[in-house]
Image (cartoon, rainbow, N blue to C red; front, top):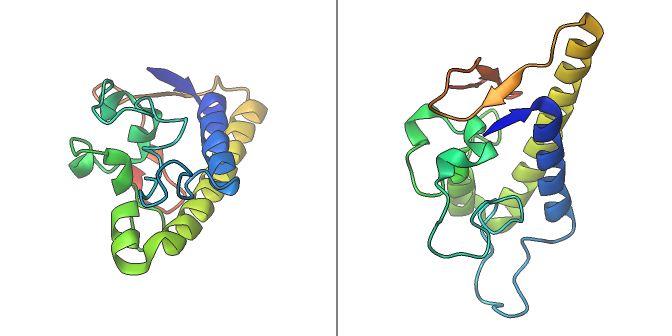
Amino acid sequence: MELTKQELIEKLKLELDVLDKGGYAPSVREPHRMQRVFRDSVSCPNVGTEIKQVPCGACYLIEFVPQEHKGKEDACHYIPLNARGDTAISLLEKGGEEALHSALHKWLQDTIAWLERESKATATSGRAPRVLLTAGQQRPCLLLPTGRQAA
């Protein structure tokens, strides 16, 4: 799966919209079941399924997962969401859903802004936009706004 920066920006904006509109609030059908960030979003290729049909490596979010976590179940839950390296898993354990949603909101905003700036800089320089590729393919390293690199 190949994504241009603009396609990646649009997917992240959709995720931000899901978060802003309460998409991770408890379901009316299952009020006691906590919604999982990313995994229960329309942007997940496995949304609505308990057994994954599409491996995490085929999801656009794999670009942001550190190499050592790419093979894990729900790899997107290991994306560093701030400079401390907090992830969805660690934030839920430490601070609960509110802390997670706050950090996720900031990460999405920061990542979108960073990608838009980089996309604009690419457009003004006259260079062709860089294509981001999923794991297992040769691709340039993606420098994240947190100062970390996606391997």
